[in-house]
Length: 600
Image (cartoon, rainbow, N blue to C red; front, top):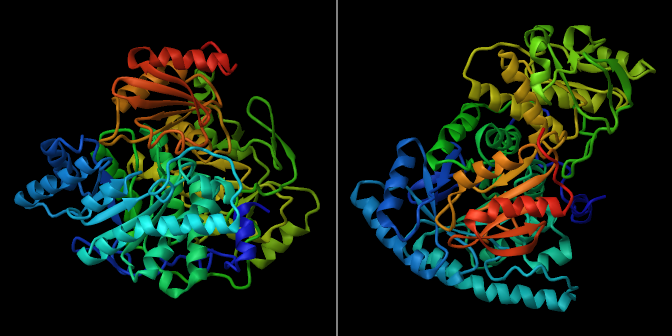
């Protein structure tokens, strides 16, 4: 059992983060008011973003904030790395108010409690990261006795209490936002860099706030890996439920450092959309390495189906999930060998999740198969010996379970269920020896824009893959053959179940950023996009550096204006490299660690 699963067992956490995994109901949360705007409760799911301008440049911050508000952003976050930056929030707030803009402002605080105290005088919300609010990150390895641990908590209480009291007096809200990889050394040494560590870190600060009778809190648990992010939010909600009914604080969702383009949108849809589909989430931010206003249409498209979605009753009773709820574990299907388009395809067990397509897609791309590279169709739907099942039919489930040999099974088209619910019901009832073909839709149609297809397919397939369900996928929401193939593979990569290209972790930029993230990310991709399976993090500053690129193999991190530090994992190995040389030096570093291959 992993640390998260162990926590569920030892602390009597409910076995589920939701009342029922086979129906939809939005998680009930208390309302938190921020600058006159309600979050949680009966309010719609709110959309927010973060500006990238230098906080000391008042007019640039005002212009970027107005652009965000114009496209539908409901709350704007601004970095405040120093007390001086925090003091300038007064001028930004005053300028916006003079222009008739009352959008709530959030000060983003790392390392500087003094900056938080100043910012709380001028903005409507303060975001703190428990991992670095009262701690510097040194990656020290040591064992804490219970007495030492308690002393550390008391030190944190002393540092945090003045901010809580000030926020309480001024009606300012707090976001307690932990990030994977940026946990304190104390938490890391006791709980590891794990979902459990992230949740415990936040709860420690929440308990202090509650002791002071402060409840204007929102939680977030961000990670760049959607599987980690989903597991952590689920564990958070389960722990909040276990703490008591009055721990019903709103939840902010986000996949941090999602990157740009199609990949960034898919990662965000998998992480955010999967949780929204389970009723979790009261406000979201889509973090893209693009101009901040480009995040808002994606966020609006993500929340739109859930703002109008009503609660549903479970179509079944007495059925429980038979997969881990807080830890990723692949469903243990038995292997079967199928006749693929160009070679035999093995499904089940630890085998690679395969891509099936309708025959029309294969025929459309057959003449350019060599040019498709890794985006190859592998199985033709019409040639598969599929067992199609209605998961609501006990008779059909019994028939499948009576078959002694493993068969490829799927949900029958037209079943009147949400696809996520349908495939969860299938996985919960059929014998695990049968591999499962996932479908992104049970009612194939091509209406709508590509972004809608991308988000819908990523939510459905990504959610199930992160549950450990699925041995092959079939994507039909997008009709264009090339786009549907690319989308299917990119969903597998973003869900972390099939790595076939370079993976990038890129922060979305903010006022702390020390170089142009969009241009730099593009240069790095141009030089390294052929390195299959290598994970490269591009971080604008040290705050989003060694911690938040927790899973990366190599890191390119802003260390000072015009200077870059290079990392292997979380360890800085090259310092103060001139930006003009840094990409080449990154390539040299990859070569030194035998991860480089020449492009074809």
